[in-house]
Length: 537
Image (cartoon, rainbow, N blue to C red; front, side, top):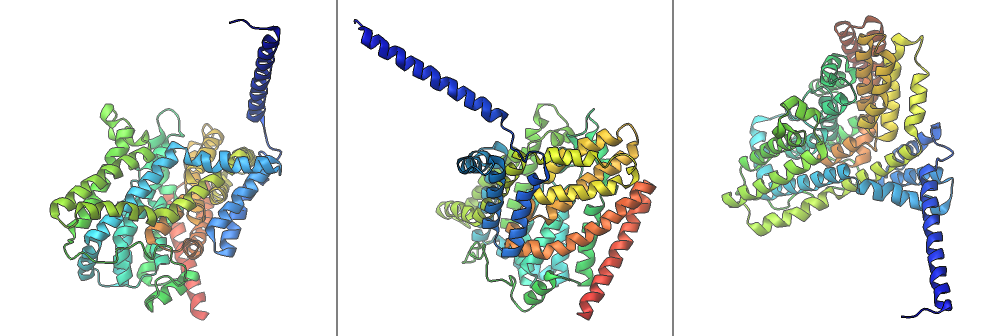
């Protein structure tokens, strides 16, 4: 085939255009890689989550509030450029978080767990357990203490804790007229606060990973007596339940529940999640066996991802586990075993089992939507350099304030976790700084400082409406999310205030035997004062 000069020129022109386009693409990629927003590493990085939180508390509407926070973060990142804003919301936010393997694993676990709850309800296991429990748990106090006990027993992972405790205890607390807001509080307060003081948990693994020389678990165990927020939260729950005292918005919810209204507000996002027809073939074992299988399979799944079956011991496997993959694996195996159990027992046929899969998915849609938006909002703060701003701020406090530093670290941990909605991200930011500041100077103060990091992170996570654990607790209790946040906040703030003072005491005494009793006495005093105030009103 012969080419004319004209054809050769056309080919050369096309090649030149292609080369030019490729060079422009490379240049654009380099420019994108080097792009740093003007607000990077400044206080403005914390504004988007603060906007979302304030809007959620004012409007009582979560989805739009979270989206406005995402929009503000994208506007700051792009320098208020329209195209850059839209691109960052999609590529840097929604698409990025939904393509993250860890997040997808959590979503799979959520969907499977929702389907298991639907299966247990359809099989009549939940109803049978509720009937059995009604014969043994005969008071509101007993129902709430049983919820706390089960929450403490399921210490492996906070996600697993929230949804499992909710599905098991909800029929019992409903029967005794415990409000959904109170149930969600008890679930939330036995999730992260319990996991953060349990050496064998996904949280212990996360914290241990930030300490070098393989001493992470040892440091974690030494820090447990100084984790005042977690310990005092558990104490507060028991005091409130036993003394039958509530205050703030929770008092209204509990009063309405005693009159038969478990929700207080009209918005009931999970109202249709329960099975409408009770299966009379169901027995208690149709709830207990699936829950037990789920616990065992999830634990095995987690240690499997940590290399337990490749030679690592149990503790090492937990320290190195991937909670997302482990929970997804465990829940998938558990639901298969549950379906087989129901088919063998003939409480459900195959078609009924399969119908529960989409039913469970639909029940989890509200939680999945809020989680996706919350993760996207965190991505916005990350792209604005929130960690850089916090790193600089924390290091500026070091120096002459050494004994006050645990209390200061606790407050900073609360603020970071509240604004970003993540405890683990807060660990990653603060623990390396604490080790750098105290490591060689005062090892005991380093332990207290690390415990303050963990306590502050859990406190902020506990208070934040954009926290995934808070969202899971709302889903587990099948409570309106804003109702859960607004009723829980006064309780969490009271414990946080007492914990702050206790960390000041610990900074000077450096003894848990002195500081923890001081914290308990202060907590009892605060609750007594608040109780008297409520009585006067």
